[in-house]
Each structure stands twice: as structure tokens, then as C-alpha cells.
Amino acid sequence: MSAALILAQAAETTSNPLNKGLAMIGYGLGAIGPGIGVGLIFAAVINGTARQPEAEGKLRGLGFQTFVLTEVLALIGLVLYFIASA
Image (cartoon, rainbow, N blue to C red; front, side, top):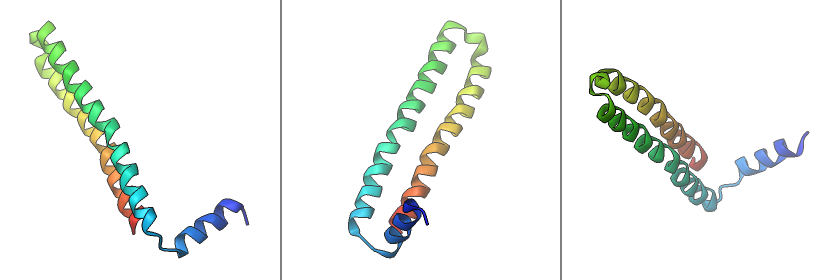
């Protein structure tokens, strides 16, 4: 068996409270990226609307689509946190 598989099995059998803390820190750090991304998305929508007001509808639609894609990353991180801390 490979060393990675052996380590994964060993980590699975031991219940270490340190794993929950590290998972929490990891999720907190992972949530920074989507937070910055959402800010950049809506800053670009506001900037584009200020430059070309007639394109507001298209820009808003694109902004919300990319917002949803960015938030999915945060939700995946939340799911992985619960998997890691279980």
C-alpha cells in the first residue's frame, strides 16, 4: 500500500481535537478568497454601470451569475469543513 493511503487510514481511526481546530482555521482562510472575489465582482459592476448606464441590466445579470459561482466556492469549503471535523 502507498504511504498516503496508510496515513489517511491512520488519520481516520484517530480522533484528534486538533483536526477540528485546523479544519476551522482552514475554512476561515478559505473564505477569504470568495469574500474578496465578491467585492471585486460588484465593484466592477458599479464601475461599469457608472461608465455605461445603458448596460446596467446586462452587467447586473453577469454580476449575479459570477457572484453565485464565487459563493459556491465558499459553500464547498463549508462542506469540506464539516467532513473534516466529523
